[in-house]
Image (cartoon, rainbow, N blue to C red; front, side, top):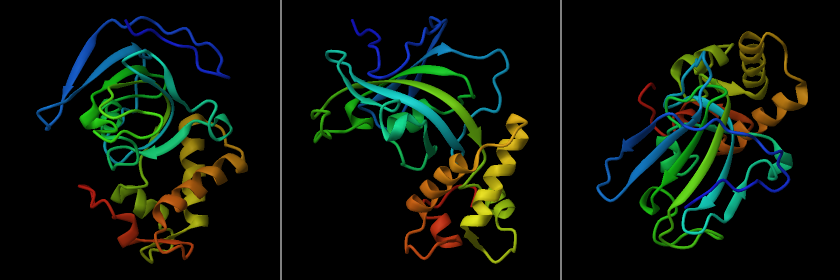
Length: 219
């Protein structure tokens, strides 16, 4: 039976046992994602949805033997990972399994091969492997794929986003949600990552076309 394995270089975290399990059916007939809630805060808001910016730690294991193939706490200086939910920046199984999560919530997400790394695998994950992720969400915020977020960020209304506009938006969002400012280096890292993933022509701006590269429902 698969059991929780301590993450290398991670602090040991004691998870509350799950009280319920839900199955998230997927359009593909050969796979479903199993979601087990390990911990949920009493006040569970805001809840994530497609297009939201998520900040989370996640650790990946092979279901076959419980061996660990990824640990976000020891990758990239141990910072939680930032990604936009539901647009393919993580494997499809995580896009499904992390829907409707709130800050502070922890889940165990079991993903079949068809919604993970498929028949080819991805080193060190072998072909046709079912994988399990331990996920902890730290922040859920609007953007940078919602029209609402784009309009809020585009201060001069020229339908392009500068680094300064995105950084200022993130700064205000954090102050509003956390009641205190984040340090500049932290915001810079998030902003750099957003531009790395979205500034397709590398001109230092995110155009409305680049912003909507995934043709979001909301755009």
